Length: 29
Image (cartoon, rainbow, N blue to C red):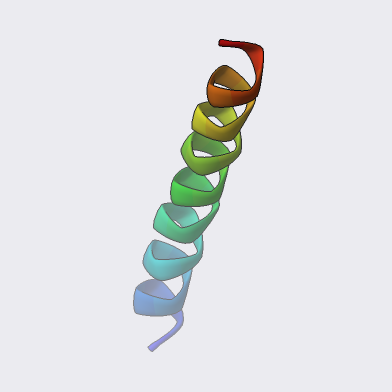
């Protein structure tokens, strides 16, 4: 359960990072 939660948190933070990065690119363009 803990391993799965850690796996989910890792992917969620990764997704949030890429989403904010994409939003910044759209604003800059």
